[in-house]
Length: 606
Image (cartoon, rainbow, N blue to C red; front, side, top):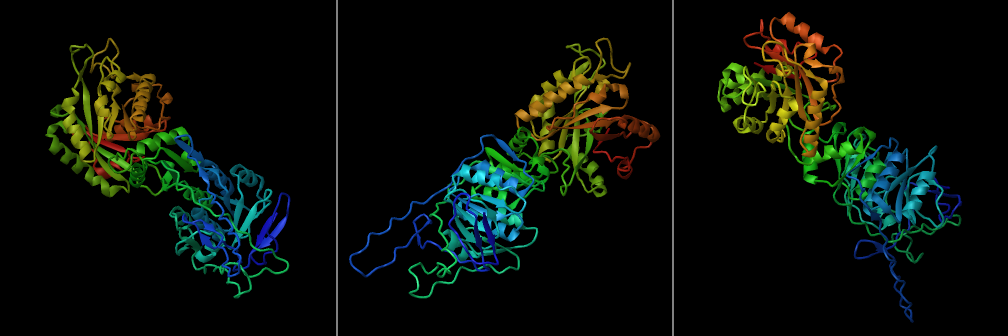
């Protein structure tokens, strides 16, 4: 057992398998360092000058050792470890194939872990942790896997080392000179770290001269005092002669830090920020990005950071990041850098500390005032009206209020038309000017389908060119979905849930294949029978945000009754409300609209 006690002196150092060696650290720990530096920064022994003849044969400079790094083989790797020891082991396995030097720190000592992090980044070495009550076997197995030759033990750590393992002792809170004396590496200035800021400080560490992290208010432990002149042939930075009961501090082999792992980033932000794991990733040169809530699409800064990094592989700290395949899709989407109105790439972000979103839309089709207010003016005036309609809502919620346009792309018709489907499909190029202008203005766009006697999927696929734009979603209007023997306005249309799920599957796959931001899928409904077997609605696809839009008209008591009835036994969706200028008695103003409970996520005006 290697046991380090900061209140005792070093009593023994050399260790072998099954050896139980007690070592200790005083407040200023004596360490033995190799004095000369190789050209690459690794430290080698300095020959002692001699005036005597014959000149002795110089001692060969040891060959520097270096870790071997390997990026994870999969596009995304989730490290689920919830304890510091588990997370440290997982991080080491993720990026280190071999490590001749490993840093070990106590699991319950933040000051020691900060020191260990600085040492690890300088050495290019992983950090593992031990402590009372922890099983040392996984740590020993990891040392064996890594082919470790030497361990830098920081603070009061404990482990039983493999055969021939060298241990170099470092005080928790060691300063730059002390760390250099112990490791042979160079360090930057001491940086005080306030309580609660430790993870950010470790994430910011970078070689070749990392900052020396110390707890705020602590005085960095200095290097050992030099030996009296002539009392020893060791270098001036070496510790004083050992006491009769102590052995000299051994030295690390000279170390050359490895080249950083490329094309890889790490993600954190789900409340799992173990310092040892963060230090190991930084020692491998892996940038660590903040991802609130575990979804890299959630925030504008997160999307922009991933777009700038353009990673090929991702390592996520914490099981809350979810399945690795889903994370890989999310990262691919975020890496495009495309942003939705209101920021980020989620339609309705639900992340602590991140504002949510609500939408206020004009409904209709361009060039036709008969079908809604959207068509009562030209494109620039439509955008101005959409923004003005949304503006009063902004003072009523802490969420971002995003203006939107819901464009009727296929229009229910009284006659069968040339294709016999009782639906007039507007050409993509007729809709494109408004669609692209709205997107450029930071608005959301939803394409509404009134399919007549054809099916929703057939019509949706006709608008793939517009749906390929990141800000364009889709709406299904079952009121206008006819059976083969039906015509419009003689009955209320309806759709089976399997047809709806088929559209959802196609749209989600379409979105994932093109790495598009999340899309809104709106289902219009004002009667229960309009979506048959609605309880089986598939809401599982991460690429979609599904809204059931309650778009009945008439008196407010009647509308409230419809709202409550449709919400009964509903699947987990978001909710939309429609205000009719002419048909509602009376139409609700913005304050009254947001008194509807739950507050609608989407409000449209027709």
